[in-house]
Image (tube, rainbow, N blue to C red; front, side, top):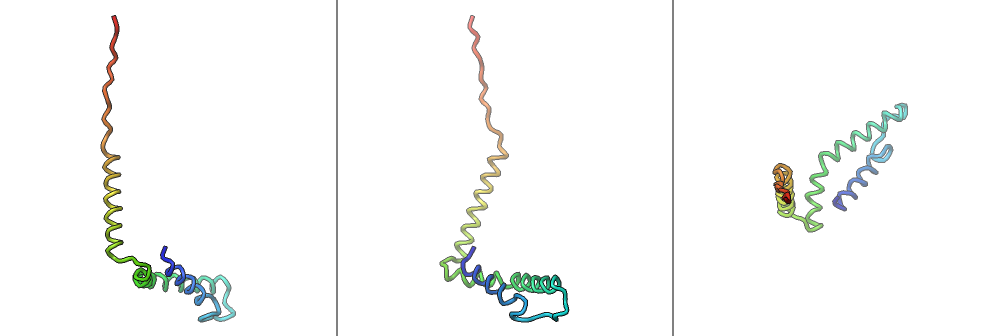
Length: 100
């Protein structure tokens, strides 16, 4: 995983913790409060993590070309593996010589 994405996730978790950025009414049940903050975290992370990943990959030296080559190599390796499973192994016919 990308180091900067890990930092972003931790930062997002902290600012979306109850009482930091916003709070729900105190009379609400704790489970409702935690669930609400969790859903907000999940939604924000879902829509922003790809953006952060694209931006931070430039800092770590990765490019979209690198990921394309990696995907192509993985696909090629998967196809070779699938082909090796689908081909039956050739069995050598062993004949026994009977001595008279």
